[in-house]
Length: 132
Image (cartoon, rainbow, N blue to C red; front, side, top):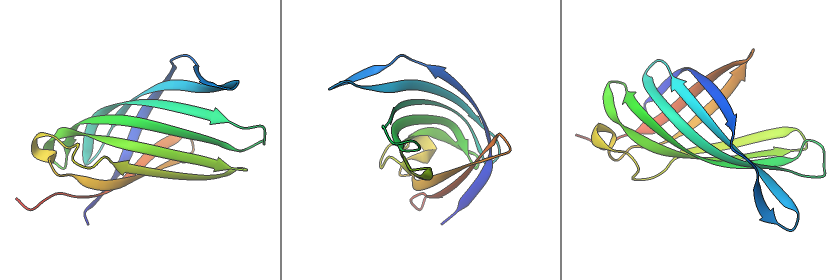
């Protein structure tokens, strides 16, 4: 499976809280991203996040639209984020939404990892495309 890595810039904007009922309120945030490297693209992410009464436990879900070029192939695709913080231990599943690829990225499948090192954001995208 091909793999690409690179850095991305990100800007976070609060979008206002979302009432989930029962006194539970989720934070709603918009992220604007610029990917660099083999994934040369922009993205818009909308995230809902909740914390719990236990310090270090929280969760978030997000949908992201990435548009640009992946190793020179132009198009867009969607990803879905599922993040959990379990008493300080983070896990993140970030998956390309099946059949969301457009143009030259039609049929794209894959998973992405995000790492933050010294305040910088890095991505690793493992992907596949149908044979041309």
